Length: 469
Image 1 (cartoon, rainbow, N blue to C red):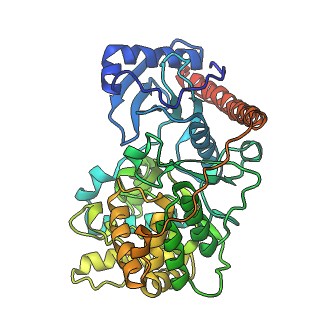
Image 2 (tube, one colour; image 1 turned 30 degrees about the vertical axis):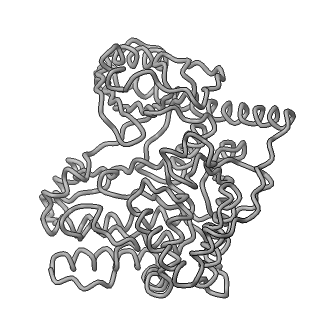
């Protein structure tokens, strides 16, 4: 795999849509890339998939072997952001099971595809979005327990600080997460038109950055960073509003990893294997045909959050009707809301009982923040998403926060008083050279890990393709 570092211009756009790209020889390019990586002529079955909002997917099947997935950004990513996501994937695979295993990546366009890409081992199973409507009551209750168990495993990944996990030399070498300084989009940047004011561009590792350690510091750091970048009193007053609702004593709880898009579309499920199903048949077990989580995807926006914000992201889609993600309240699902349907109530009770068993104190934390300080959830949404007005939940949160600002007399002065605005200092040529050197070193560390993984996968594929005696 070509490891030459070629910086992709930030304003470069791919010349055609990925579907057009696929129709114009993209399949042959994908096969050529795989031939280079695996150094062996194999029969690859390549199938284009639409993917999500930000990445397109190419599904790859290898005869008598494991499946692969090629993920390609629909828009070019900043090299730092791309490396952050690659390192994040390496970190997750050492901490969690049932996550995509990254085996190759290239942040440049200097490859057979002519695009940035990630190559991953494909997780087994089918999308929960497709299977969920067909489940009976017993299957849905079983799934509630599965979801609780998997979420608890995510929340058990604790960090002293909170924020986005980013790439740094220790990150790759020691397989531990580093918290980066949030990099917000400035008013004058073209990206502002699509992401909205205050939106993330990426987070970057900064040795001098003192990452927040609790909810109080998390909100303060985010709003101060936004105010510094924006020069807007709105974010200053959001922090003043937060001080009204924050408890006087700072939380001492550890922060936990959070999958911020934990919905049906990103969860894969499958039934138990044939041997276990046969055992269940002879033992008359009720586990036969139950949906087990086989994988969770789309970790790009995961973040280490204070437990008060992480725990309130309750997966109410398990029991919500109709089956849609859009019905949840801006504060998230209320675990104490009366439910008249006994089946839905049973599913919710199953999930909550399993969460409390896995993480004692979970219910108390959720009730305390949602009932006692709901304004902090709203401010947490804006702090995390960077006032991304493209998101429906963020727009609703911003509307509610504006009402609270009016209630406390902090809204009108936003338009009459302008805080002093000083442009952020530009790095010196020496600093830029040092940053390029550090980024090259980080990318080389990532590639070294991926080269070893590719070698292992190549050997496993060759072993599976050998004819059996």
